[in-house]
Length: 229
Image 1 (cartoon, rainbow, N blue to C red):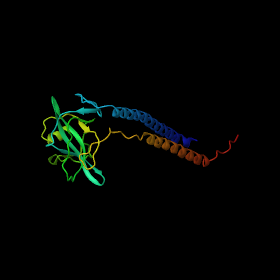
Image 2 (image 1 turned 180 degrees about the horizontal axis):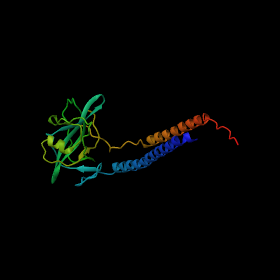
Image 3 (image 1 turned 90 degrees about the vertical axis):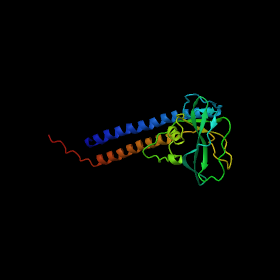
Image 4 (image 1 turned 120 degrees about the vertical axis):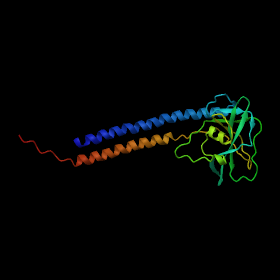
């Protein structure tokens, strides 16, 4: 039995960790469900005028003048076997810094001119990104960016100051008309149940392995000689 002491303790510790991870993922699933419910509720409500300090992913409406002479491209996305990017244009606002607006996706090889919206633009607020160690390298000289960092993009467009967030335009898409805006608020993926089942599966596998090991060890354990008086 002594040979099972260390493996048993190790198995117990690992079992506690695996069950804890699975339970944490179930808690994350409940948290994510609340977030998705809030997004669904916000999507049904009308957009609000953009405040001075908007919360990320708030649904807002902004008025101003689009600087269609200053266009940047963000990202690389394939749609219907066509490579394209999102069109970024500054929106000049009265009494506030210019706001970068993601007007939607357009193919790189566009044969027709871009069609820009008129009047107020409705969309959601997207927080700034920071380039990571493995991020694709921006090309400011070509106004092509892979990290949505407003100050960096604004500087490449010749703007001294821009708002720290980006407005992602929302609206219906028209076939053959570009850029094509998104039609809904973003929804984070909800894979937490899958992750939880994975951790619980590891825990069950660990128990089975230990039981098989214990059975084999006890089966081959030498018998104690009879005690002589």
